[in-house]
Length: 325
Image (tube, helix red, strand yellow):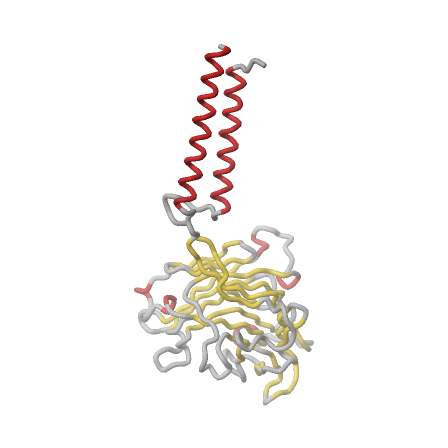
């Protein structure tokens, strides 16, 4: 059978395409890394999927106990009535009841031990993410936030120790989520940077936030912090140590999940309030990790084999041209 040079050239072209596909697949399998530079990707380093039943995992979570801040109406407890894990979900439930002098109870869990003597988990930077379903009852004030691990030491204390509010939600403003930063300014006084997002800004028919599950996160870098809801970036703050007494955002912070009632921001409380729940699907913390580059030896042999194949095909083409041209 006679092979035309055009047919041979088409064969070579097809072979080149195959080789490019193989090389592309290799780089994809190896994580998409570049030979000339290092690439990074987010990798989970800590989390709780709440895939168990009962009390929150004691190796990860402790409790805040009492009436603690912001003039809030609830008494935080560790009772199953107020905090439990069931069917893959963390449930923090606020209830109207008389308890230890308060008229409401709820729960706040933290990655410190209950006595604040042991840090179960803390992080410097990273992606902090929670998927949650928010309560609808007026007066509720859920939040996922961080505080410095030195918050309870003589050397630290709020606001010097810093605070990152991954999200705060006020049920009395049911379309808006808040992402905030707190620290001590260079004058030593509390400084606040408040961001907010209302989905109606891009979708006039958006439902109240309590109507569905949402993902809230911050991406915390050395020079900035970014706030997201459902992967939409809505707020960013540049970290400027010159504007702070002492930059708390290059030091460890621990995590807090709570459901407050009333207080300086959550009030007024609905007159018909009986109970309300904050549901949490997961909490995850990730860090940027370098993607390993493909082994040089493997790349060398792959390239050598590819070159040999192309040279062979080219020689075959020239031979066909001489014999049948």
